[in-house]
Amino acid sequence: MRKWMLLTGSAVLMVTLASSGTAGAAPATAVPKHVKPGSVWTLEVSGGYCEVQTFLVDHLFTANVNDDAGTYTGGGKKITETWTSGGFAGTTDSGTYLKSAGYYLVELFLDGSEVNTGALVPGAVSRC
Image: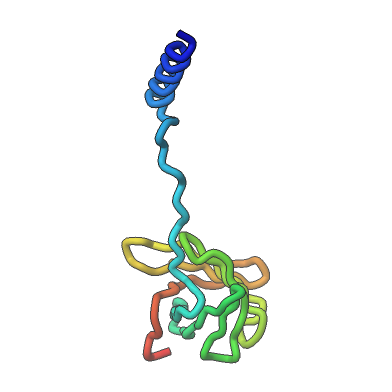
């Protein structure tokens, strides 16, 4: 009899959980990273400036222009880059990945003020 009561109680509990949406809920999945160590992307800034960036381990990047280099965070839905050396030293950008377009739309900042906009696109653009 005791076993029956436990089974009944468990069955009721399972039905209650299922109807509340908590039983069998899928676990949250990680956002896929678009920018990964070893990947190459091109920063194209409004007005024509561009640089090809190579992303490295430890959240570092280097660029092919002005000895630019820096750090980055994110790489999934969002990315933030901070230039620590080169011609862009002191600049940061903040980008949001546009899934339909396949690139990041970015805003560039110097000393906390927006100075330009652009795009971080996958691959190396030949004119850069």
